[in-house]
Length: 243
Image (cartoon, rainbow, N blue to C red):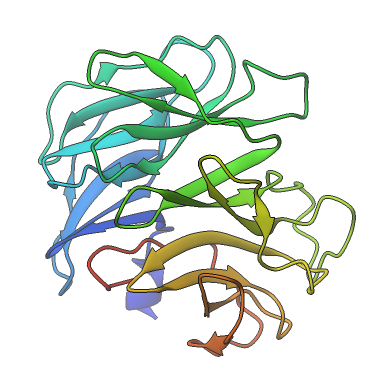
């Protein structure tokens, strides 16, 4: 019982090498992949979420509401002063990084609610929009040429096995070509694409619980990797083949 009482509520994991960063109590924390004592990285009164390591592991991008609407911030991966990177004046949420070191984020700035669009941000804060409608999350393959993205944001009801018109689903987009659906054959939720080594790992509730699955880059050859029953996987992160 004492061990249960001491457990926190840990969310939004990010991984790089032997280090995991996660969110608890509205702040960012760092811990070894082997476990142990976690170290608090932020103490700001605002809330942080959605951390993501840069490709070299030296920088964390994250979402925070320090000055009003949620915006994109960065700081050194081992802690330090946060730097505000976006000034959207609307909800902006970190989705990850490109292999070339640009931050990927979603924003409502460029479309009417409930529309979302993905954009990338370079080290000089220059923004480039990705020409996709209703794209809420995204991750590039290792070559940085193909984006695997989630269409629609979380619909907000927390309904189990939701199969309505805004169920999240996965698509593939290569510049110069039309985006193609990957999970259209399933009416439920598929999200959090994590491409690695010719496959795309993702979270889906096709067995009744949000579990980790994978498919090939064209949406075929499905494999189930976790078999949790009843308790959903809420989010996941991948780096170097580790999830």
